[in-house]
Amino acid sequence: MKKELLRISPGFEDVMPSEYKDLIENGPYFKGYGVNDLGTFKEILEEHPLCAGCGLALALRLTMASLPNPEDTIVVGSTGCSALGFPQTALQNIHSLFGNQNAVATALKRALTLRFPDKVKDVVVIAGDGATADIGLDITMHSWFRREKITTIMLDNEAYANTGGQESGMSSKGAVLNMAPTGKKFSKIPVPELAQISGCDYVAVVSPYAPKKLERAVRRAILVAREVGPTYVQIFTPCPTNYKFKPLEALDMVKVKEVDGSYVSKEYFSPEAEELIKRLEGKKDKKE
Image (cartoon, rainbow, N blue to C red; front, side, top):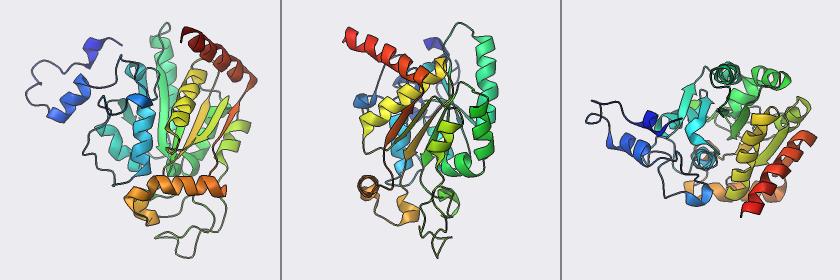
């Protein structure tokens, strides 16, 4: 993508909000930013509508700072809390219907490959647990079966958070929520394992508690999807509103789950993906 394409169309500069101008002028494009640079560039509007302490909002910020080529990345989102955040970000994004985000991403990736055969165009699905593991599980898995070269990132807040706090397939067994007063009756859906046996070449489970690990997982997933095949990253994004904890305690909730073993970070590579990452990261180490 050319830098000129990110400019506001002539004649509209005076009517665009200053916050939007900041996303254009001080966004992440063409600068090679990473997680360590958060706070020095504009990746999301400060007054976004997501709740205070929202783990999803933090994960979204970290994910945006982890994209290898944000200027040539298109994110496909879906209905959910994340849909409230995407219009506030410095990202090219498409809002799909609830659950069909991987179908939209499939068509988009194929079209971009035909239109720009000699350029890198990354297509990344970012959606919640309801859209990915419940409503859209079949569409998600079939994109993996077909080996579509897209990255799927689940923002796992373990609930249908934007519609009142119903349990989702990703809620932990026994979790008590507004619309699950007696506790969830079955275990969390093992999506990372499903991704692995469904053909994903790279699978990672991470959390905002370890930002550099999250950054590495997102970058690896996108790089593997470019050359090898489908990839999946699951990010724990605790929800203070529906799980009734203080906004400042979001990262503490992540730590508790990591310690008790209910949400453990992990990583899987196919042989082809492992070879690619060793080659790419080896080149980077030599340059440094």
